[in-house]
Length: 238
Ligand code: MG
Image 1 (cartoon, protein in one colour):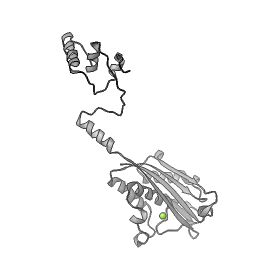
Image 2 (cartoon, helix red, strand yellow):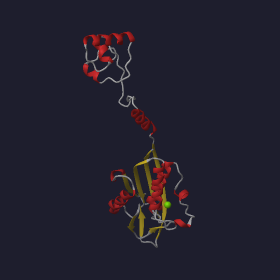
Image 3 (tube, protein in one colour):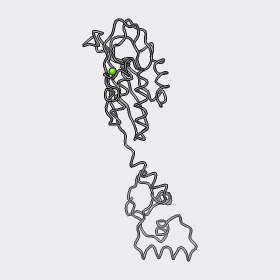
Image 4 (tube, protein in one colour):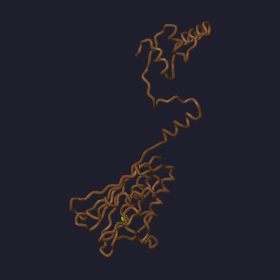
């Protein structure tokens, strides 16, 4: 469009800044005053005099900054960073138990998981992902397994701590994605019930909570059903 005379439609889309030779813009305004011309901006006035307008391609993100509120909005946009955290956890099966606790939900099973706390491998991986995104230690750092006060602890306590850390850092949890890794128990029959629990525990709508399961094709410790693993990623906006 460079060098061409803009159409009236183009003139409506022009953004600031607009630059002019001083004498040209002065004449344009004097002419407009004399003829009581109506124009929406300087470019239209100069164009009406028959001058060619040179356009530079703009972008919607190149917003106009004029008012105090404009500055606040730009600062907010520039200050925003997105962090991804990753967590991984494993617990061994204990044949003396009859259920697995996964993401705060009890799944009946021929064995449970052993651990110092309730061995909720799903919530542990989720907490570690949050700690990772916050750049603030890991679950063992905040809740040492050597500390007797966390014996048989409900892992929801750990999650509440991790979520509070996000708030303290003025962050917003945007999304979690949790994967159970193992041959058994199967996640499928309990997926909706576990999602109900997660929806209650997390400040997220169901559509921002991923919950999946995979096997390791009977390979490794999960394949031999010696233990259950979980892997989680979270996305946090700061
Ligand atoms: Mg653990």
